[in-house]
Image (cartoon, rainbow, N blue to C red):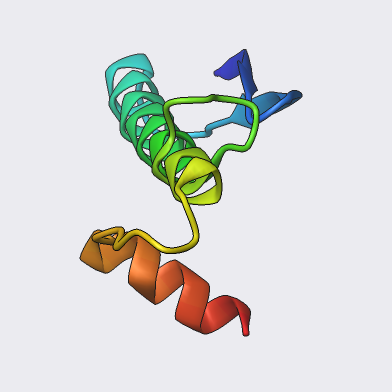
Length: 77
């Protein structure tokens, strides 16, 4: 099964091989949900993503990071 989707300013092609169409569909849906979750947190193409909100926040104001974004940022440095 192949799916094409737009995420984070690019086009993604997702290919899943499984024993049955139902298994492939379930796996592709799980992958799609994971991509959407990461996009909601990290996309600079989406003004409402957590990273975009952090980037737009005033320097002198506290910004509470989610655990996930804090982990992403710590891995990036």
